[in-house]
Each structure stands twice: as structure tokens, then as C-alpha cells.
Length: 182
Image 1 (cartoon, one colour):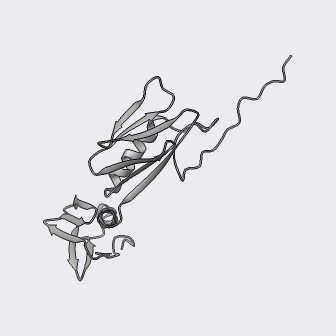
Image 2 (cartoon, rainbow, N blue to C red; image 1 turned 45 degrees about the horizontal axis):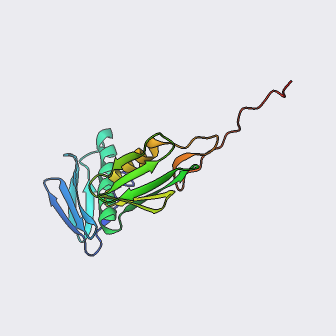
């Protein structure tokens, strides 16, 4: 049996869970999230815990068991605490600014500023010109938006310039070694 899939998901106080024909809706203080569970999986709410079960031990069902449980657990975590990704902007003259309406403006060495609109449910803050904080209830949306921001100017290994996750370690390379001159 799947070690992840068989763990029950505790439902904290202040969180409402509705299960209707394998459509799981979780409502909490940070928002409402919905997921369509696979038709082979059975999702039930028993004694304040969400339990995901599978019909048999086929390979596909074993894989879906852990996936479905993780998706629902991430929804419960998201509506209670939320998810957050922090990015650092490194480079001379590189900076980020969050403007009203969840718009992010990046000046990262191009001839023009790069404007990125955050998706619904994702908030963007810039506590400092070289720091970006992306937060929201949906783990997938927060992670995808953070990856798209990083993709604008990924960190390069020679000088370390670019946009990187705060906990990311950039392996630095040595520059081209000269031959010794004439």
C-alpha cells in the first residue's frame, strides 16, 4: 500500500471540505480550492479526516493514490497557511517592483522593463528592490508563477547575475583562463 496515500489528512478547525462525486472542494481563511479526483479513487470524509482509497493494486491506481492524497493535502495546507516562494534579484542595476493589480515590473539588463501579470489568487510583493515574495493558496499556481519570473533572467554561473530562488545555490564557474600572454 502507498505510504503517502494511506495517511489520513486531518482537517483543521475553520476549514470546510465538500466532496461531491469525486470533486473535492476545500474552503478556508485563505480561499477556496477545488480538485477533480480521478474516477478510480474514492475520497471520503470520516471523523474530521479525509481518507483516500484505491480499488486495487494496479500500477496506475497505486500512482494515483499518492497523487490524489498529496493534491488534497496541499489544498488543505494552502487554505490554512498558504504557500510562499521568495526570489532574489542579483546584478548591478537589476531591480523588481510590484505595482497595483498584481503586476510585477523587472529591470534585469534588457533594453526595456519586463512586465508580468500574476494569475488570480497569487499576490506579489517586493519588500526590497532586489527581493520578490510570491504567495497564494494554490501551491501549483505559486510555483509556476515563480518559475516564470525566474525564467525572465535565470542566474548565470560566472558572475551570479539573474533571478534565483532564495534557497537556491548557484554553482559558480571559473572564467576563461588566459594562456599567459606574449
